[in-house]
Amino acid sequence: MKRIETLVIGAGQAGLAMSCCLSDRAIPHVVLERGAVANSWRHERWDSLRMLTPNWQSRLPGFRYQGTDPDGFMSMPEVVGYLQGYAAAFDAPVEEHTTVQSVTAEGAGYVVTTDRGAWRCEHLVLATGACNLAAVPGLAAQVPSRVNQITAMAYRNPGQLAAGGVLVIGASATGVQLAAEIRAAGHEVFLSAGEHIRMPRHYRGRDIQWWMDRSGLHATRIDEVDDPARARRVPSLQLVGSNARRFCDLNALMASGIEIVGRLAGIRDETALFSGGLANHCALSDLKMNRLLDTLDEWADASGIEGLAPVERFAPTACPKDARLSLSLSDGRIRTIVWATGYRPDYRWMQLPVLGRKGELLHREGLVAPGLYVLGLPFQRRRNSALLDGVGDDAVALADHIHASRGRTAA
Image (cartoon, rainbow, N blue to C red; front, side):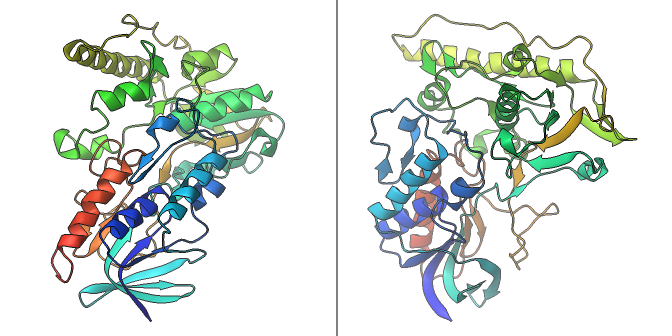
């Protein structure tokens, strides 16, 4: 059995940020990665996807974007190259193609069993992220076999889809982007929209991420919100990584010929049934957007920010007055369902009493148990904890905690 003071599982942005911070503190460690560096970015994203944050916001401990297009948005191959460059910059000790099979406690430390042998460590950091498995509702089992089903994690491009209509379930960032791409490829598309948050890509002449960054909203701490559990479930903003489009919202999708329906409520007799609450979801989405824009305007006024365009407000979502409540899945019109219903982490290899009733990891700002940590989860410590730009601050905090607790058994 190999021994190391600290093990990190996962070599994406979280695991590499953690490794950099541990190296800065001269803490011996190894990073285990099931594939190659940035494995999820390589194999679990669709072909046309670009980052939703501008290049200037790609900031990791000791490393940031240095290219010629700071206001652009990296493609997936560019993200992979960026993270490979990061790992090389500090010679990250990554053991690639090493799959973790189990994690158990032993004395004051942990044993991590992999397909290439076992490790024993005093400190263990789980940096596998929150998007390991597609979150597909149980009613998917009721879809007729003649209708193909694919998750956003498995989707790569419209060429995978059978000719004919497509029903996309989910209207957050992933759902609206996939619906737009599939419609542009010539398919008839229906988009099932439940809770969602409409947002302009640019506001008053600046990228919306500039506003979130400069105003301090991204740095909001989890202990500053009223309902942490709810804050961690907030849908992603309806954005696309492009300077060419202000909105990728329901209005833009309807203008392209996509039919918007309500939240998928059930499937009965080979028919998809939709909620009648679409108008309410659209109104609430507009309300949330305008509240955020009000907050940003107030911050700009109080801070005396100069050079901004005038205050803007946008026409409300043109919600269909008579949105359909059902759609046959047996008449051949719908050939494919795309599940853009989110993701969830995978901790099936964790043989420790640290999981909640729904399989979620129980932690307090990244502290799970004595010597056990997690990094890269949504709103872990701050609103931007899961972003390329935010995971570094959390990594610094956890590395400091590890450094302070070296040789002790209590967290």
